[in-house]
Length: 296
Image (tube, rainbow, N blue to C red):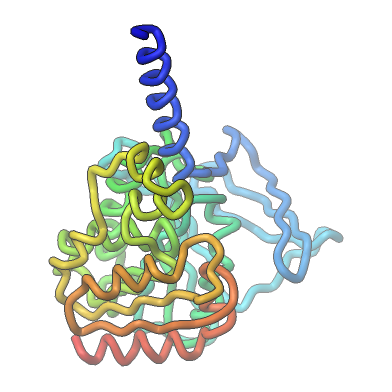
């Protein structure tokens, strides 16, 4: 009987560790790599990466440099997690942006797979600050829930002090896991930003786990921080975007976040895939963010 209980306890501990790890799926770049093969929606590209700042140069299959309608400035900055992180600033070549989106990406991939989600918004007067959490891409360290939370705070602190950003309106744009992170740090960074957008975000880790594995998932997943609670202490404009066709994060969890939040807020219900909003509703999202900023 005693052995059976020990085996059950061990099984639950192992299951809990495995379940908690499911929230993070980083793509880590090997040290000293200087070439990345990248597939976009329209092309297969080769990216040459500079050693110290990780500045990318995009090349076509034939070796010609790809001409972009925007610039990418790559840089490295420190995080309170103790790790140096890789960030990008994307700017349109055709306009002088007055608004900055500080992007928190989802739980998978890295900058080179995530940045394309935000490109459509460059056409509507926004520039985009993006970064990789610890253990993602060229960012140092290990991807843990504790580290990425610290990284998110540090990224905001770094972004608002950049010369290209400090005189613009600043909006956190969190997608999926990044939306959950944005909601968790929202009260702490309220004085530094002007609004928050949460797209395809979930209310908290236990709700997400319960949707996958019922009450057992809720038991197995740890939850030191709860976006559903912290969003209640944020008082600036909030836009929640969620698709009714989202197969990754259920629509009901995004709505739960929205219902817990204070005014001024708006729920923008869309269709299409998980965090695909800017690709299908770019103009509508841009206009809603601009309206939200005027109410601040």
